[in-house]
Length: 480
Image 1: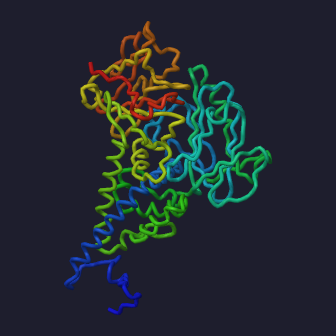
Image 2: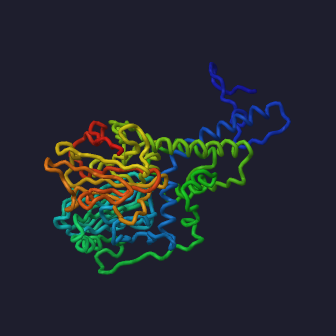
Image 3: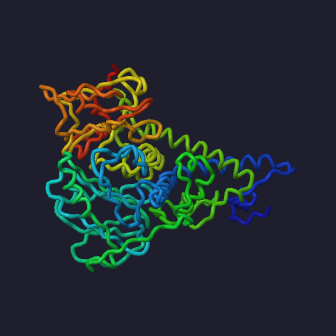
C-alpha cells in the first residue's frame, strides 16, 4: 500500500480496510473475523444509543398514548388536559402518579412559535408547580409558588430555533428541544377545598404567541391514527425489547432535535448503526452482523435500564431506597444512564428544589413488601419529613407501578389530611394492610393490593438536603 504520509508518519489505511458497516458471512478467509467484529461494533454502539435514547423513546410512547382517544388521559397538543380528580387505579398515562393533588398535563410542540403559559393568582394555595420538561425528560424549569410566588404571570416557552421579541411582561423560558411536556400539580388540602382548587387549576392556560393578548385561543386538532406520532407500540415492554425501538428513536430525534452541541460526537457514532435525526431505521434492511449485534444491544440495554431503575445511584436503609450524594434527579446533564433509570422508575421526576421521592421495596428484615402481610411505619414527632409544603406516602402495585384498585380508595396518606391521627407525642403511625382496620385507625391506613407492592414517600419543598443524600432515612417498615 502506498504511503502518502509525511516522513516519520504512517498513513491511515482506507476506512474500507479497517471497518465494515454491512457484513454477511461468505467463504472468504476473513469472513468470520469481519462478521464478529461488526457484531461487536454494532452491539457496543447500540447499547450506548439505547441508553441515550430510552427516555426520549419512552416520552414519545407516552405521548402516543396521550394522543389516542382510547386512552383514559387523552388530550391535545399544546392544550392542558385538567384532571378534575386525583389519580386512581385508572390513571395509565405514566407510572407512579401522585394521588393527593390534581394533575394537568400536555405535550407541547414549539416548532412554529412559542407558547405562553398563563399562571393565575393562586392565593394561599400551599403548593403548585408547573414542571417544564424537554423531550429527553430533563426539567427545563419549575414555575411554582416556590420559584415565582403566588401572583399571576405569563411565561413564554421558546424552542431552540426561535428568535424574536416577547410582549412586555412575558418571561422567557427556554426549552432546548422542539417538543416537550408540561406537568402541572395543584394541591388541595382537604375535600372541602377541591372545588376551589379546580377553579384555580382551570385558569392555567396555554396560548400560541401569535394570538396572545388577542382575547382568543386556538386548539390543535386531533392527531389521526395513521400519524407516525401515534404509530407506536402501546406497551413499554414491547417497544423497549424490539429493534423497532431504534425506528421510534429516529422519529423522536428528528422531531425533537438534539439538545447540546457537545453531543454531536455521540450522534456521529450512532450514525454507524443508522441512528440519528433525519435517518430511517429499517430493521428488515439490516445486514446479518448488524442485526445480530443490535438484537443483543436491545436485550442488554433494556436490562441495563431496568437495573439502573432499581439502583439509580442509591443506598438501601430501613428498606427505603435513598439517593446518594450527587445522584441527579430531574436534570441529568450527560449522565444518560441515570436519566434512563430514573425515567423508568418514575417518569417526569422533578428536581431537588421541588421535592424528594424515596421509594421502599422491603421491610425491616429485608423481605419484599407483599400484600399477604400487614405493616406499620411509625414516624416519631422529631423525625417527620422536613418540608416547607407537605409530605405523603403512597402505595403502588408491582410490577406495573400503578395505584391499586382497592374498594376503599385508600392509596395515599398525606400530612395535610385533617383526619390524620397523631399520637399524644406528635408521632404518626401508618398502617398498611389489605383489610379495613378499626375506625380509629382508618385515617392512617394504606390499602395494599394482593401480591408485591412498593411505597413512595414524597417530600414537597424539602428543607433539609439530607433528604437528597441518603442521610435522612424514613423509619423502618415493620411486618406484623
